[in-house]
Length: 334
Image 1 (cartoon, helix red, strand yellow):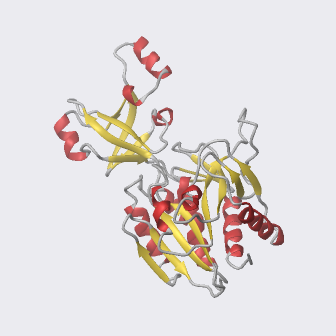
Image 2 (image 1 turned 45 degrees about the vertical axis):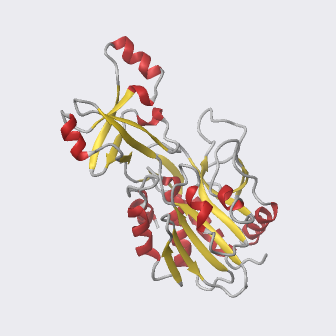
Image 3 (image 1 turned 120 degrees about the horizontal axis):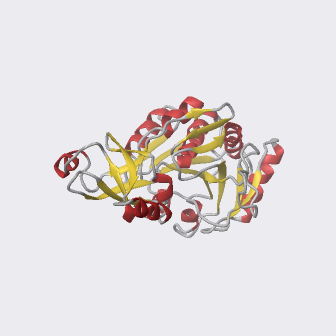
């Protein structure tokens, strides 16, 4: 499964530009599902039919955070703004992929004093992207205004720990892909929704389930791991201790019955889990709660260090336990 994680995290796919990710996923799963389609907004929907009369939706978003070119200076440097939750601090010194061009992020400053001040007060106003050209005309041919960029860093395997850009939320996509390949005799009908534009407002989740009568929805996404030095100690999520069952975040409170169902399934199958209360952020579960007449929803989260940076870290055993948990949920009574 690590090769799958490597391939899918290294793909280019900022919000609204998820085509390469969608094409990759479709090739991976097309022979393992009963139905597959792409809806009008770009969500990839795959279905494995069951006979219980009940339907569960598993969700993972395909998009990643990034930047978009807003202005090109006369000397070919680019000005950019964020796409999704891109923190400007994580951009400094990083390499970005814009179309097929690699650029590096720098900080403006006419003097050492100004440069130091700008480093202290970083914003999109005082950074730029250097793509190795010397004129506006050259830059316009390669990266015209409206070009989207993402981190370009690759996958690193530490054994149980793995590092890459875009674990948020390609790791969720990888878990769904592996679940599709794993389950053979699912009791319930399972809809797998690989959604677009989560990072800019859970856009895909609002519409992905609209044509279906869904009984329960589960978003599979990352959550902050608070196990690093001097991390915020009001929350307890940690790498390697199992997938997290979310109780609440800043956008939603998980359905109590769905939470208990996931907990019971974990306990019955000896799958380690953590309970998660996140004091910020949100996932596509909030979108499913708000679609049609409302779908009882929850999130299964993968603890992740350094979210929204070029180097997001996960524990591989949390991933394999998540696949096991989702697979068991497809046959768990409710």
